[in-house]
Length: 350
Length: 183
Image 1 (cartoon, rainbow over the protein chains, first blue to last red):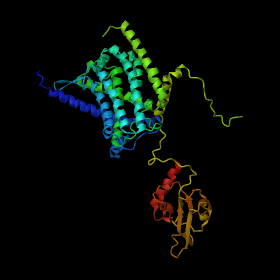
Image 2 (cartoon, rainbow over the protein chains, first blue to last red):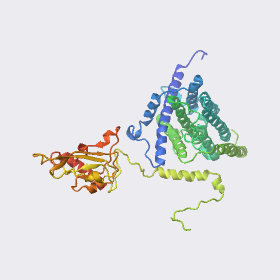
Image 3 (tube, rainbow over the protein chains, first blue to last red):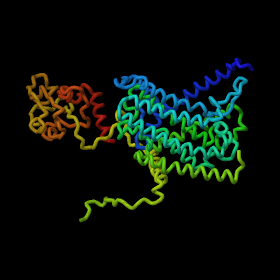
């Protein structure tokens, strides 16, 4: 194969896959807003939205339409370019993480073996961390470009929170990576399918830490201080209106979906359906079982995210920082040392 | 001094023990409570389709009554207007002309009868004052509107349907009342 020869089928396959992944994440995020309101309602003995369409299923469409029709306000003293860049970055970084997630096994499609993953890069987890840390820019740029002291303060709050919890998140993953010996999400999934147990059994503390940090990274309650609708004068998107605000809010839901999928892949066996031997299934049914398993796990985690949000009150800011630096990071280090010791003494090195 | 009720609860101000300090267990306890509520019966009343039953002594909009032959009972004596503490009722009396016996029960009737629903306090004193059983408080309330003027209800708005000439409307209005009373 010469350098110029290009596998057009490969490019097409990846383009279609990207389109599908993005569409699916958008739709899931859309209905996550609906689910959030329904869950909130049910937990408060209410019904939630039920007027637009059957069971209120058209509610997210109505919300989106409303946001599109709202007046777009750009503050006169703001930096216009950065002001528009902020929500775009938030959206972009939210979508980019989905590239390395393995959505299913390999299927044969018209003589080609198609991986249900946009990019199986061998540093998948590092990529995710890189993109997640870029997410801070959306927040910071938006808050700074608004030229509003409250927005700036909220952006600072959000950025320092994100940085603090990313640390504990990374540390909690190192223990997991010691066990798997791989940074590729596909390899991690396949190890869990072939092995007896999911990684959550080997790394319960790691799972808990990662889950808590994911909550903080997604700015979900009880860590939603950057937003804090009720008491802290909104947040970094205070000056935003119309669909630019919609982008920020929407990016949050996409983040939530993606991080739930990442948790499912890392700790809950990815597209591994429990009590089913995938090797015995034919191509198509294995694919469907895998997708159902992965999405089922992700949706369950999303539900838990919402459940936590509608149960717990928000942390105070010093409590949040205390928990991050004095609680989670030492615990993650402890977990790392213990895991390292166990790996060293009992298991063969990968 | 004795407490007025037996419901006072002493606040537990002991320092938190270890389990409470790590917060995680308490989170699970809280989450089990919210999950319980998740499956509870919802208290919402879906308003336009469902309405909350009024209490049996509910005092709503006034209606002007007719007798069995569909004649207006009101004789414009003015006792309701006198009894009204909010001065919401005004009326003008007129004499029944020959040939109008099927319309008015007695030889004097109200040519104009208005209640200002913004003034009315729905105390029901008009109902008590009426010697002719002509005015009653129903079980509905005044619907919202955009102008003050539309809250001045004239005789047309207040009179119940004629049981002789409009039997269907009469039955419908009556049926609605009966249904509400049952629930």
